[in-house]
Image 1 (cartoon, helix red, strand yellow):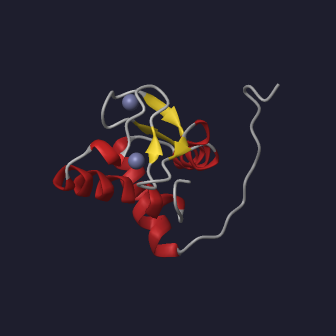
Image 2: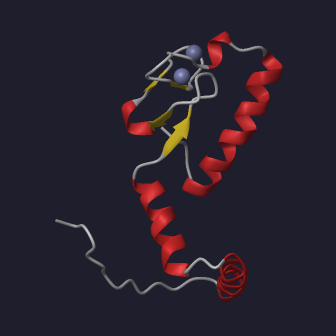
Length: 107
Ligand SMILES: [Zn+2]
Ligand SMILES: [Zn+2]
């Protein structure tokens, strides 16, 4: 039902950020509305790729491991528990980008 239906969105954001974003979007030939749509879609239903098996899964479909506090991959059951400290730290900082973007924890 929602397919192909568009709605107008009026938002107010920081002028400098908007300028920079417009330039970056022009450079990549991506309409700003598409970028916003893309982000909002991710925000509404965030997903990640499993660091172990590479499958994409939605955060809402994954459980949090009570031991390590990470999402458990619904496909291969991987979480931080099976990782060495070094690997866990690098993944932690990669996932942190998501949390910055979503202004909060993934789950
Ligand atoms: Zn997996
Ligand atoms: Zn765990």
